[in-house]
Length: 196
Image (cartoon, rainbow, N blue to C red; front, side, top):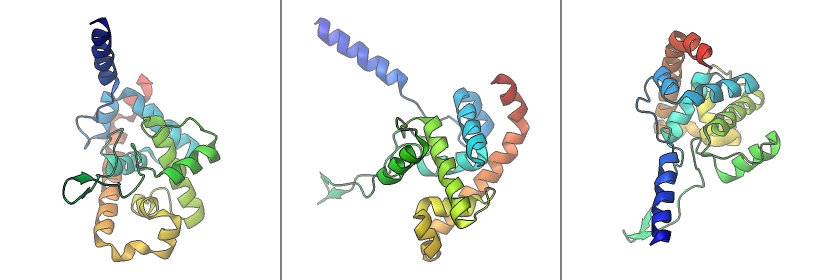
């Protein structure tokens, strides 16, 4: 009986620790007011890599809708047998295993976790900084930074995305959301800076 009670209490405490997505994902000021450590996380990544906060946030929103343990859907075989996922993408940044491993090694952040928002911001900014260096994509160009993020640097160089109308539409949305987030951030940045 004691063991069951301890197990139930442990599960309740663990579920209380689970990070929930922000209530209003359309307003970056409200996101940062609700998730007060997220502003510092994205600001630190921006200072380290030069990638604007709005670009990081727009990419993360597109990839995971700010869901910490997001992953691609699991298809079924014969309509009911769970099958393998199409990708190892996971967490806020939807980073694949190999790229995440490269990030951990190259940055020395060996304990980085895709479910940790600060690590995810740093990863997205790191990847965009490489896209800037390798491909010459300006930090303000969220559309092409997202295309490089989605397709990989080699895929972007080959312009694999040109025949993917759906992806071009998504990249345009990422760009528009980054502009929207940036305009919103201009109205609350002073408040956020004074609180942190």
